[in-house]
Image (cartoon, rainbow over all chains, first blue to last red; front, side, top):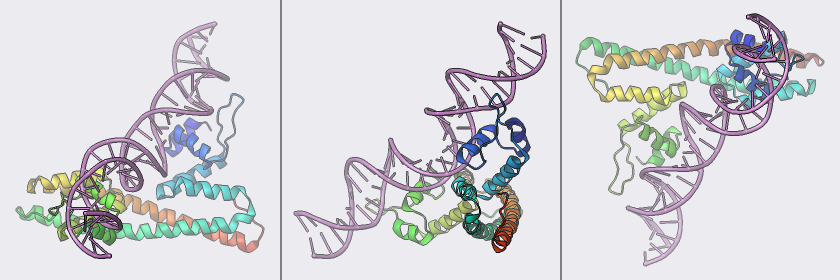
Length: 125
Length: 125
DNA sequence: GTAGCAGTTGGAGTGAACTTTAAGTCAAGA
DNA sequence: TCTTGACTTAAAGTTCACTCCAACTGCTAC
């Protein structure tokens, strides 16, 4: 797969794909004779994983660390597990926070609806 | 309340509080004779709201817009309601995505636990 | 063979959200 | 009175995560 195809498939710009590669979030991608990137299925799987983790808020730095550990082989299994567990915990916290904020917004919107219906109220903010 | 007190109370740096004020996320805070900020309870309520919305991911720009509308009075009630509804929708989407990612991480961690237990497996990444 | 297009590189630029700096003011305590 | 420390301002600097640019190369179609 070319960079354009991967870019389209995952909705990630070619620049970003090259950037991720440079940062080590994707392993060095094989090139054709002419030096053009040729992504394998495995590359794609990893790109999809990176996209998912990035959109969940894992930093480039953390993902870099994870793949660095991965490169060091089996002896880093535990370290990688711990890294994922740490990130999972942070995500869980953000998840709960988000849930609360959603409730708060729902309430605020309902207050707005009442204010709009009663035609003359104003809110504190 | 001084800026130091508010900063401590909400775990927001004094710099950030001044920045928020400059950007219109907090109304102009009253000063003492000497020009030192003196936050009211209402300022604090608003700061708490801003903090909550910021940590949920609402941008400075959106919050700025919201408070600008607020300054224009009752006639912007609907617009503000719509703004909040739009942000709520985006949050909801991120919430669902986060839920999926949490599940995915749980699964991945369980795979790691198995690999660690069986002592000789390696994973794809 | 040359136009055009998709790709390559390294490096510079961007936008969001702070964060730091420089230079100063003010109030309280020794 | 002097020092200390928390505050003030405007403006420059930082960080993160891209995003764009210039200059180039290599296929493909005419």
